[in-house]
Image (cartoon, rainbow, N blue to C red):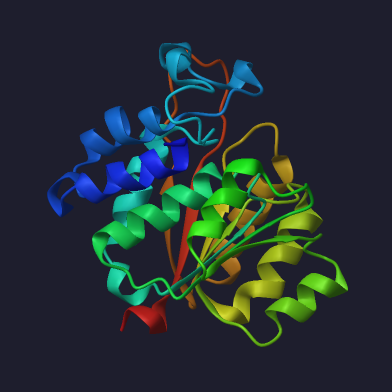
Length: 239
């Protein structure tokens, strides 16, 4: 049995109470699925046994940020029926989103992972198991990508692609009218000043359109400020 099969089997055993337990998500579920093992100076040493380990999903997230974030979007799981991730890397964050929401009871009708790299092996297997999940190799500024999203709508879009100011702005503006929730990664990351600036900007310019939520807790063992998740939820969608 491969790691993706083990992951799906594991989620099948979980009940909704555990999926709504922040401590369980932060200290058990997310780390044991496997954390990313790149740029380790930004990673907390106390989690080192999970880098590239566990079920090897290589989730590039801080569990103490991602756990409360999942609880936030989980509050509206019944309304989330489609998901897109721009910049999926190894696919760990994408698969965790899909499995978490589905386990809560979301009826995911379409999920799309996008990146400029070749299709990761684990994600290839995952999308092969789930016929309504797909990977698109594309630059999010390309005509190919814009044609793809032209006639589609996604309740939730996770933006984690080009981390320059112009890059994140492009992804946000191109998908704003086709989404209800936009999520921005690296909103307090000192290595991504463009994302930090853009997040601060839209909180001012779009405050009449969105409710904003932030998940930015840091680990004391890491010198500096990294990652951070910003959520913009369309107010009309919540009503």
